[in-house]
Length: 382
Image (cartoon, rainbow, N blue to C red; front, side, top):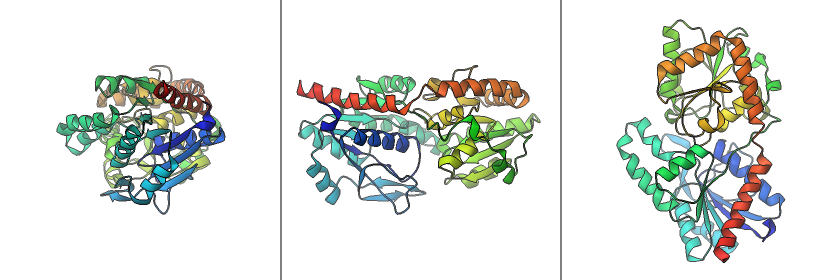
């Protein structure tokens, strides 16, 4: 079987609503499949003004907004017209990219019709409760995830570290890598343009510590704020450049007064802003890969990150950046302080990160995913 014989149904919670790592990966994959003659339908919630100009045919799944997080919606299920179009499409492989009700219904349909199911893991949902004082629920969340993932024919995850986590959690035994690429026409050192940061109050001689992503607590905001307070206590001059927006922006403004907010950016503008950082700081432990980390590296920006899934795959400690044990505020501050006080170290690690980012190419990554689809189909036929 070649790619032109594939009929892929992708069921996900976010395909074009919010630009993030999973939406970038899914859209790249769909474009690749379509270019190679495959038939693809995407089933996901939709909104009136999405952030992403999506690839392929997107079929809207009934949904409701998450309270307090209206940029995301929860599918009510694969029901009504969406269900009819799913069944009429008659996929020969089902790809579930979120552990919600619609994905579970799609997986159930696939099992009843002898169609293989691939599950892709894009975020560490089980870590989210700890940021909302509900850490005791983590075993329950893991069990809920396991109920879906064990009913898939295989899983894919973005990094070796995440594969190890999934195996430790007994999610599956067949787990492959679906890595991520970077758009090098957008993210590169040549995009550095200090005029933008000057306009929001960051001078050329000030070191800008960057945050990129949704401004939500689970992205490590408490650790970020505590680290900035520690730098201030030590008398280390710095500014913070925040790219993104979200419901915790008010909290971030209150707790990181040296922050300057550029808001949500995309395309070439995002590349200019990222390249305008001097150090990228990612204390989050919820990423399975860390597209934002790779984008910063491609711009020649050294990285300080938590030693967690995703970052350990991308960042070579002491070469392209610095890895720190999660939550170790003094060590985070030590690492950032070294970069602030040593411009040559920033330049050296940034250049090494840019070189490493070139190893991540979308074409090879998407070809590997297509081959995974074919492998699962061949196994089912056998």
